[in-house]
Structures are given as C-alpha cells and as structure tokens.
Length: 241
Image (cartoon, rainbow, N blue to C red; front, side):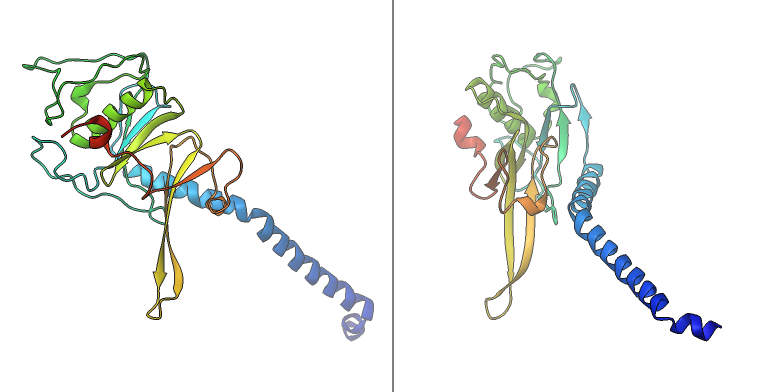
C-alpha cells in the first residue's frame, strides 16, 4: 500500500510542485524584503550611534546641533584641553554629541564678569538677528560647540534657511540641510593595486530619509555631497584669526 502511494506519479509530481513553489516563495520573499531589511539595519545603526551620544535638551527636539569634537585640536586661542577625534563611519557613522535647540531665540547670560565674550578667544558673541532657535552661550562648553553655533547663526542671517542644525567634524561645519546626505567611500586595495571593497561613511540630519543603496544614484529630492570637498571652514567663514 505504502509502496504504491510513494511511487504514484501524480503524488510525486505534487510533492515536487510543493517543493518548487516553496523555494520560489522564499526567493520572492528575499527579493521583496531586501530594501526593508537594509532600512532596518540602517535604523538600528543610527540608534546604536545615538545611544553613545551625550544629549543636552534645551528646547524643541526637532531642531538640533550636533558637535563632533574631532580633529579640532588647538581650536580657540584660550582653549585649555585638546579636542579628541571621535569620528567614525556608518559602516562607521559619525559619533556625535547632540545638542537640541529651538523655540523663540534668546541669549541667556550668567553671573560672570563678562558673558558677552567667548571664553575660547572668539570675540564677542554675534547678534542673533532673526535666528529662530534658542541660544544659551554658557552651554556651549567646548570651542567646537561654540563655532558650530556661530556658523549656523551666520548662515541663517545671510538667508540660508534650508537646514535644521548641523555637525562639526575634522575642523569643518556641515549644516544639516533638509535634502542632503554627506558621503565618503574609502576603497581597500590589494598589493596589486586592485580595489577590493571599501568602507562607506555617511551622515545627515535625523529627518533625512534615504537608503544606502541610493547614494550612488540618488533619487530626485536627495543630494549627496562628498564629505571631503564639502563643509565650511569656521575660521575662514567667521573671519576668526
């Protein structure tokens, strides 16, 4: 009886069909879910990086300044401590300290001799103009944090409005434009000079949505800027000597 069951041609064809159908379903699942798994991995990486951050909330959580104290060594005339390099990537993404700011702008002063002058040798604090975010200068406790804020204020007051916060890394300020991802690919080469893969470094404002697979051919509405060739030198831009 069982011999006849397992040797029946129709039964064997049915079993074979089920195996093939299950395999096709698996391949279809892998194909259709790849973008979502990439997004999930990217989201997980951002969460992991944010857990490393020191967050100081002083206003609206939707507008942020990110300060990466990396290679800003010697920044400020009176700075006493060297600024350590904390840069990384997304396959090494930027490791940052995030300062969140917004609300109607005000400048808070404390009970010191002169709170209108930078303790880092950058001169008097700039006029805020119509800069919409709250600025508490005494909370800018590193030279890089103060430089970042000064650059963003100047950008805003010169009419640059398409950004929300920014980052400072390797001595340059990167405004977090609403449509920009900063990108860098560093290739690995073998002994014969052939490229064998590489590392990808990306960062952006937290409100910019993108997939890593889109960066080489970005869709409309997304700009990809090279990390090395973009960014603002704060000393030149602010005319600080």
